[in-house]
Structures are given as structure tokens and as C-alpha cells.
Amino acid sequence: MRILSYILKRLIYLIPVLLGVTLLVFIISHAIPGDPARMMAGQKASREAIDNLRHSMGLDRPLPEQYLQYLAGLVQGDLGFSIRNQRPVMEDMLDFFPATLELTLVSMVVCVSVGIPLGIISAVRRNRPIDHASRVFSVIGVSMPVFWLGLMLLLLFYRNLGWLPGSGRLDIGLDPPAHVTGLYLIDTLLEGSVGKFRNALLHILLPAFCLSYVYLAIITRIVRSSMISVMGLDFITTARANGIAETVITLKHCLKNSLIPTVTITGLSIGELLGGAILTETIFNWPGMGKYVVDSVNFLDFPALMGFTLVVSFTYVMINLAVDVIYAFLDPQIRY
Amino acid sequence: MLDEFRRQYAWQIREFFFTVKLLRRNPSAVAGFVIITGMVAMALTAPVLAPYNPIQISLGERLGPPGGAHWFGTDELGRDILTRVMYGARISLWIGVLVVAIAGGLGAVIGAVSGYLGHRVDNLIMRAMDVVLSFPPLVLAMALAAALGPSLNNAILAVAFVMIPKFARMVRGEALAVKEKQFIAAARASGAGSLWIVWHHILPNCFSSVIVLGTLILGETILIAASLSFIGLGTQPPTPEWGAMISVGRKFLMDQWWYATFPGLFILVTVIGFNIFGDALRDVLDPRIRR
Image (tube, rainbow over all chains, first blue to last red; front, top):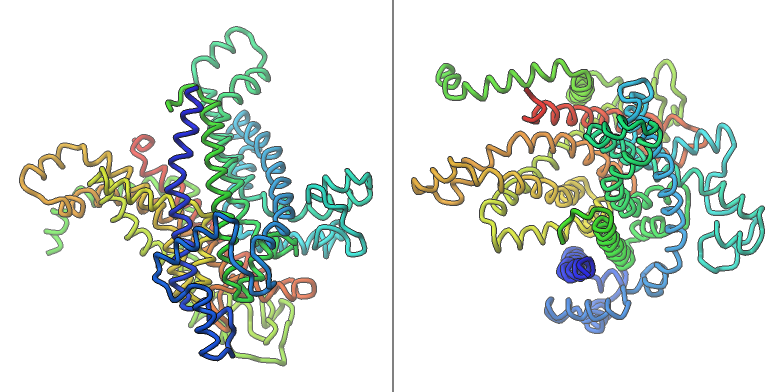
């Protein structure tokens, strides 16, 4: 029951933050660039046409009223109208979302499945060569310009070695699988075509590694330091004195107790991955929201850019909420 | 004059030299320091040491591979990439320093005021900071930079805006601890106003944490600013900027690998420098680890 009231409290607290987010996006999109109507109408439009458009878009009304109108639209799922694609931004987002989701999920799997074991090994073999190597690997990771890493991966694995494809989600000759989840790795399997699954998997490897490297580095460091702090506690010494096997101590006692910071950082990483996807998708021509938004920026398609910004930050806020709730489940000591 | 200065700041001077001594014993601090000073030296001496003019077009030498006359090769307009990389350090470091100065200064003041005044003001300010933190940094910087229009100064403003809450949050936390100290009560009892206390007592006590965070954020800033340039929202051609060079170099990646490779390598090394120096500085300044 207490956890329910905690969740409720967090949800109520969310309302002002989300309102603030919409307000900030509104200010950026309506107050700063000057005149959305002029952008919508294009450079050559007559003054009269712009005035008409401004009136029909409600831009001649006071700003607070415009904000309320904007909010009312948002509640109905109206993110504005994309200038480049000439259709609602919401529809664009829904089309491009699955590709980004697939890339983010696979990156997350890479982060967790490599980062946690690497962190454990570094903690157990503290100050040995493998720990130093993992530290160097992590420092490089957090200092890496993602877009440059992507280019270097392309140079090595696509151009020089020719092991992996360099762009897109499937080879150009292949038809995309029937749309069920929108995630090619799942849809191809549902279709029962192993060849296409293999192709999709090969395509996702480079972008997923590129996107995950930074967070992989962070997760490794967090797991290492929280493992080390748990290893120094009395109950570990007791367990060891009782003759429990070292592997069991490491994997059961230590790992379980150092999971909380790991969950936090993993959750936060999912949100950050959405930001990193902008650069990765551009480099690897991955048809997701990130590539969509960069194309929109180059086209000066502001409604699309602002719609993306809003969607990403809502997702980010929701993930943080989920992390806090999981956190409360994991650690009974947390007071709600 | 100098003696008076020495006497007045005796404690701070001793503390500074003690910190330097600890840093010199720390290998990663030394490595970070060497990288940072190397980059700064390169930026300062670029006009003297660079072998060519960074924007001089020489179409006869287009896209030449690395070698004798051009160590890092040439770009699509025949400009020397080594020269442009050296000049690029000026821009990246300038962006980093300016962003950290703006965001650190504003963030520290906002955080100190918020923490010291507490109650309603604190609540309001911190909720506003939460809103800014509800965006992935690159996404918000991109939206702002696009709305303001692509240019170097707008990119600096956008990144600085995104970084303010990071400083504000940390300084607020420190201010909450500092304001309970007795010397604050003493200052208040002798009639000092809130703003006076914030300026003379709270902010100086948060100074070392701001420096540590600033060093780490400098690295992050260079990455975000380069990313903005890469998308096309930062410095505009022909200014030699690392991110923008990679953005153009990308078109030539398959045949002229050197074009995008060298500027990126310099971003990586510079950011590594700030990150390891910042980490070491944090360890050295942390009173729990220090003595």
C-alpha cells in the first residue's frame, strides 16, 4: 500500500514538471525564432498570405492564450504539422519510432550484458591488469565523440574489413518484414525468415555498439565501485568465514547488493541513449527519429524539431519515474 | 603590497600549494594536465606554428593523403588539415571555457541563492531546474541552437543554458550544508543581509566544487558543441572547427579517411585530458580522502 501511495505522489509531482517542459518547448518554438507563419509560408510569400496564415494559426493572439491552445492540441496528440513531409508530426513520429526503439533496446542489452560482467571482473581483480584495462576502456568511452566513433567503425568494419553492412536496417534488395511490432529483429522471426533476421542483426550491430559504448563505460564504472564498497562490508566477511564459495559471495551477496546504483544508471542511460541516437542514426543512415530530426533541422522544419524534443523529454521523464519506482521496490530502506 | 597580499591570503596560498603537491603525485592528474596544457599551447601558438593558412584555398592540392608537406593531408579545397586542426583547438577550447564560465557563474549564483533562502524560492528555482534537466542535454541544446539560428555564439548560449542546472544543483546542496555553520549565524547576528552572506560566505565555500565540476563539464561541453557543429548548428564554414570538419569529412570517408579521422582524434584526446584531470582534482580536493 505504501508503495502505491509513493507512486501516486510521484505522479502528482510529475504534473508541474511536464507542464514546465511544455512551457519551455512552447517558449523556444513560439518566442525565439520570430515568426512560425513566415517559415510555414516560405520566403516568397506575400505579406497578406503571411497575415492570413498567422491569423488562422492563432499567432495574432496573446502568448498565454496561444500556450493554452498549444496545450489543448497536445492533449489531443497534436504535435504540429511537419513542413518538410506535409503531414502531422505525430504520424511521422509513430513511423520513425520503432527503428529508434529497436536500436535503443539492442544497445541497452549490449550495455548491460557487457557492462555488468566487466564491472564485476574489475572489482574482483582490483588494481590488476584487467582492472586497469577496463579503466582505460571507460575513460575513452566517456570522452568519445559518438559521431566520430561511428565513422571510425564504418572505416574499419565496412570499408577495410568488409565484415558488416554500413547503412540502413536491411540490405537494399530485401523487403521489410510485415509490420507487427515494427522491430525488424522480431518481425522477421515472426515471418519465419531466418535469412532476413540474420541480415537485420548484422545491420544493427555497428550502430548498437556505437550508441552503447559511452553508457557501457559508465555502467562498468558504477558496477565496479559499488561492488567494491559492498565487498568491504561485515556481512561479506561473515559469509567468507562461514566457508561460502567465493563465486557465490561475488555473484549472490555482492552483486545483489550493488544492483541499486546500477539500476539507476541503467535507467538514466535509456533516456540518454535517445539523445545519442540522433548522432548514431545520422551516421549509419538508420531510419529512426534521430535521423528524422537531423533532416528536419537541415530543412528548418521547426514543428518537427519541437515535436521530437517534446516526445523525447516526455519519454525521459517517464523512464526516470519508472527507475524511481523500481528503486523503491529494490531497496526496502527507502522511505516514501 | 605583495607582502600584504601574502599575509591576508596566507591560508589560501598554503592550501593551493598543498593541492598542487598532491596533484603532482597523482599520475592521471599529471597526464591530464599535460594534455590540457598541450592543447592550450597549440591553440595559442597556432598563428605562429601552423604551417599554412587555415582558410587559404589551394585547389591544386585537393584531398591529398598525409605525407611530407601535409602531415594530416589536405581537404576538399586543398587546405592543410593539420593547420585547421591546430586552429580548431582555439575554437573548441574557447567554447568550453566560455560555456563553463557562463553556466558555472550563473548556476553557482542561482544554486547559492536557492539553497540559502530555502522555502518557496528554493522550491520554485529547483523545479525550474528540474524542467531543464528533463531533456537529454544534446536534444535541448539542439532545439535551442536551431531556434536561435546556427552560429558559434548561439551554440555557446544553448550549451550554457543546458549546463546551468548541473552547477545550480550541486552548489545548492553545498549551500544547504554551509548555511548551518556557526559563522553564518554570526554574520547574520552582526546584521549582514542575505545577498551579502551569499556573496561573501556561501559562494567562496563552494568554489572548489565548482572548479571540479567545471573541469568535468568542460569535457562534456566540447563534445556537445562538436556534436552541434556536426549536425550543422554550430560554427559555420570556413571557420576551422573540429565537429564541422568531421561533418564535411564524412562525405569523403570512404576514399579520404584522414579528413574525418584527425579532427576526431583531437576531440577525443582533449576530452580525455579534461576528464582525467577533473577526476583527479575531485579526489585531491575531497576532504574525506585528502589527509
